[in-house]
Image (tube, rainbow, N blue to C red; front, side):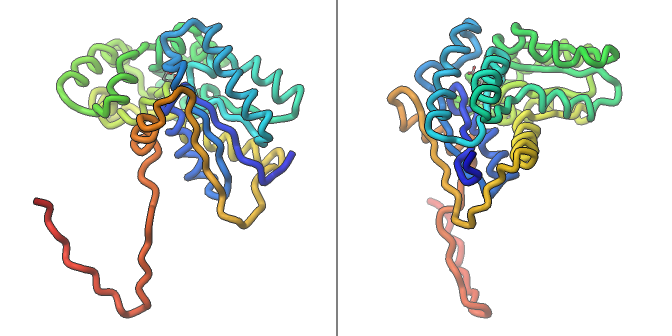
Amino acid sequence: MNRDAAIGIIDSGVGGLTVARAVIDQLPNESIRYIGDTANGPYGPLPISDVRDHALRLLDELAEHGVKALVIACNTASAAMFRDAKERYSDRLGIPVIEVIQPAVRTAVQRTRSKRIGVIGTEGTIKSGAYQDSFVADPEIQVVTAACPRFVEFVEAGVTSGAELFEVANEYLQPLKDARIDTLVLGCTHYPMLSAAIQYVMGPTVTLVSSADATAFEVYQTLLTHDLLRTSTAVPTHSFETTGNDAARFEALAHRFLGLEVGHVEAFPTGTLHLPPLTTEE
Ligand code: DGL
């Protein structure tokens, strides 16, 4: 396996860019090749067998193009096909596969004090029972789940606050508040974009666990243990692709999910710093 090859990341669309962001932050020397399946997503409402077929097609594509590791940066796809992917790529081809559910579960188990943990996700993720099954190793843990399908719609429309969002959030999250959870897993790639609103509704004592950060750390650990961390000193390259034909929408949403990258930096010789005065917009 080529250490300097890119890490392949797939998602149903733009949501997995929250994972890509965390991977770039935690592994700044790695190249990334990302495919968002906007032609077939969102995966949340689809039958599990369809999600499996779509996601495997993307992973096949990346595996054929020589990536050194595969990241399923979508909770719904991880719930639908992680075992298939592990067999198909790790066992047969030796390409490590990382998904988003186990890393988040491990972090939640470490953070909880009361052992009452909430999980929110798409309908597909919650219905699959993948999170619920992952917590059974500790019988003392009580898991309360809620599907929050409209959260994806809000995030994609750029809505992260406001009366309508809070009304929906209060309705989705009330059963979790009633269960007095102390830790809440954001089991969907889009939800970190709503973490302020979710924290506000849940109250300051509830710890939010994002699968993005935990997954990026899992990617780091996996590359380290497989001796696959990139050694090249050349600037890493990041490529983002989308299925379907609306590249402009993907790009607009990508800015929001990935964060603005630094575009241009001006250098002032030492001692000559004279910033121009700030201008106010009309
Ligand atoms: N990426 C999906 C997930 O994490 C959310 C969007 C979708 O429904 O496809 O579950």
